[in-house]
Each structure stands twice: as C-alpha cells, then as structure tokens.
Length: 364
Image 1 (cartoon, rainbow, N blue to C red):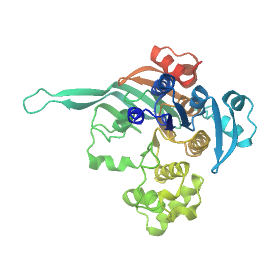
Image 2: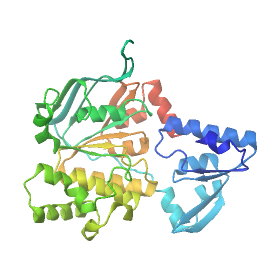
Image 3: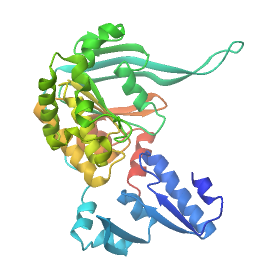
Image 4: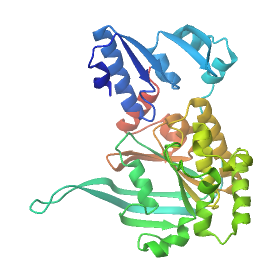
C-alpha cells in the first residue's frame, strides 16, 4: 500500500490509520519506514489516527477533531503536555486502566494439553506434502471468572489457537471444557457445548451481516440452541442489548446505522445472549479508538463480575491486556515463550521476545 502511494512521488502522503489493528512490533516498523521515507523524499505527511502514541512519535503539529470540527490545534509537545480543550484531555486520559477483577476461584473451566494445529502449504500429486505448524504443543488452563490474555505479534498463532480451542479448526491434543473432553467429539456431539463457548471477533464491521437487523443477529443463536418462541426471543434480545448499554428500541435497525463501538457492543450482546461460560475475545478493541476501547473494557469487566464469565482475550494491545487479564501467555511462532500472572510479566519479563513487545509498546 505504501509503495503504491509513493509510485508517483507525491509531495503529500495522506496516511489514514496506517497502523490500526497491527501489532506493536509491526507498528514500530511502519512508523520507522514512514519517517525514513519522509526524510529521504522530502514529502509532507498528513497522519490520521486515533493512536495517540503513534501521533506523538511522528507528528510535529496536531489537530484534534470532534463532530467534524477542529477543537484544538497546537505543536505536538504543547498539546500532549498542556491540552486546553476538554475533549483533548479526554483523549489523552482514555488509556484503558485499572486492574483485573479479583476473584477467588478454584474451578477450572478450560484445560488445553499440547495442542497442535498444522496447515498444508505445499505438495501435490507428485510432490511431497509440506506443513506449517501454526500451533506447536501449547498447554494452558483458565479458571472460572478469570481472563487469560494471549499475546503475540501477527502470525504468531494467537487466533489459530483460539479457533482450535473452540473446535472451529482441526487440531491434535487435548481440550477439556467444564470437565468434558471435546477433542474426541464429532460435530453433532459438540452442538450442546457450542452455546457455552462464544466468540467476539476483531472486526465490528465485517462480523455482523449487513442484511440482518440487530434483533436477527442477536437472536440467531437462540433459534439454534433454545426452545424460545418469537416473543421470548425478543425479550432475550432486549435484555442483552440493555446489558451492553444499547437502546433496545434500536434492535430493528441495521449494522451500518451504528458506530464501530456500538457494533462491537452488538457483537458482545450476540455472544452474551446464550449465557455462555467462556467467551473468546479475538482482538475485540483493536479497530476502536482509545475512548471507545476504554468503554468496552469497562463493559467486559462489568459483565465478568456480574455473570462470572471466563475470557480468553487475544490481543496485541498490551495496555488493554494489562487492564483486563489476570494471567497471560506470550506466543511466538506457535509456541508459548512466557507465561504467568499479568502484573508479573509486565513488571519483570523474562523472555527477550516479551521484552521486545513491551519496548515496542512503550518506546523511550
């Protein structure tokens, strides 16, 4: 994308959210590349971003917009050190913060033992088959009401691990959920367990069907897994929307009528309506700005406290992981390179790769 933009040797490069949804190490590489190209080609750069860390590292002057208007503009140091407008102050203090909820529980909801996932990447009729091992012997366990953070850069195997745990991908190894071994079950035998394991995906725009109303999206699982009639389904949809802070009267609208943060709340309501024990959160805040991220993290904490939910939280955003996860594992090339209580990993990382991730997230 950057190469295409530079093909005509422009005097101005407009970078519209160039690092959104990228992990911290890739973000740093893209940032260094943009700065290098700007200096070498002598071009101007207009950076559009909700990532204030990125803005601070690359911009000389900053404009803050709200509702289509510029509410403040100043040089970078002045704005970050002495913002004047209340909205600028809100943005600067929108970092997800706080600690995971304290829970005293001994019941293990999920156990994974030496899980392996392979994808065929080569071979044919007369050639030897070649395989890529995306998940290489990972073991983990999660207790009821707690959050396990799964951290790693793009391509490390985080999402593949999550999908394999939910039996959405074929795998080898043991998966035990609420005391039941899932790895040997066929799809028919798995069906009663599906409602207990739900997922919220990264993209709040692509994960909701544009052809379905919010009510249809949220009630879809109820039609499969419950015996509710139409009136009861509607009552459950209303209750789920209230739980995530959305107006139930909006349930007949369509996804394109909502903001990104509201769409992600709809996705959370869809997972919540089946009253699951475990929710896989696959990068649920990476496409959202910091103020909305903070709101979504607060919502997830609130729901966890109220219902004793267990979360598998996949993310490359270390600030969000620190605010939500009790324990965490760090994955590189399909293997766990570090594990432990979140606060211990953040304060005293042991593996060089973990230290690299933390350094990329907090430069200087």
